[in-house]
Length: 381
Image (cartoon, rainbow, N blue to C red):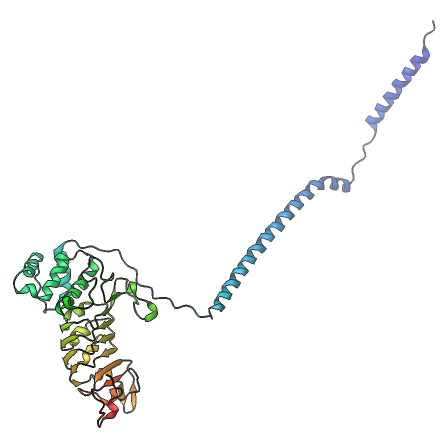
């Protein structure tokens, strides 16, 4: 048999061809990549980062615009509200001074010491009140002898031994109010509800007004630099008060307005009492039975600018302190005061009574004007 050379030849040819391809691949030069192709190939991931950054920027700007829009709307609403109010800011009540926590005084002797100290410091009461300096002796005096009817001793005994409201800041004022009550026949008062109660005199003592219950729109000057518990108005008008005006009123250091009109009060109008009430600016004592003269030092506190005194038995000259001050003839400085008096009983300086001030009234008893008609500015019944 002859060898199959054809088959072998074909196999050899295939091997040779395979070897040639391998040699070609191993020796063939690799074509380098172009720069632009490399840039494109590597830029694909950077393109994704730029798109993400761009999206965040747009979101941030949208949020900022939203905030700015809200601010603009709020500002427009405020401006519109101000326009509706006519551009006038509402009147706000005066802000009372900060109130300190209550200080309690439980010991009777300590309460008496506080009371005695205040009485001795005030010129209107110093040396006038005979109050025992020992709490036990005060209790004994109030229960026996002639002292039991002494309004000063009775008031002191009530504050020291009977009153259950032991707040330090009200001890002196409660004594003064009790003294006023006992001195003017308080049991016969018409309006006395709540008096001697076991709470602050600001809570329901009839006729008394403190800053906490005062409405600022009535008078914006009230309660300035005062605290809530300060007693500023005492209204005892037409309440059947009898006797002389007690000096204890001078211990009510925050009173600004005092109404005593239409009672049965007698005796003088003591300038020492009212001149030592540092906050008093209005005093109404008309239609009583007061007598004597009116001393100009009643205005010595520097605040009193209103005095209604008609309907009493006052005599003498009307105080020049209530009249305009004239440096020379025809050149006068008006004093902002309001007053009333009985011109038939008191000699009123022409400078006071001849006035265009509507509030300054000169009263008369009859319709007969008489020769000096200019002094009778207004007639009252």
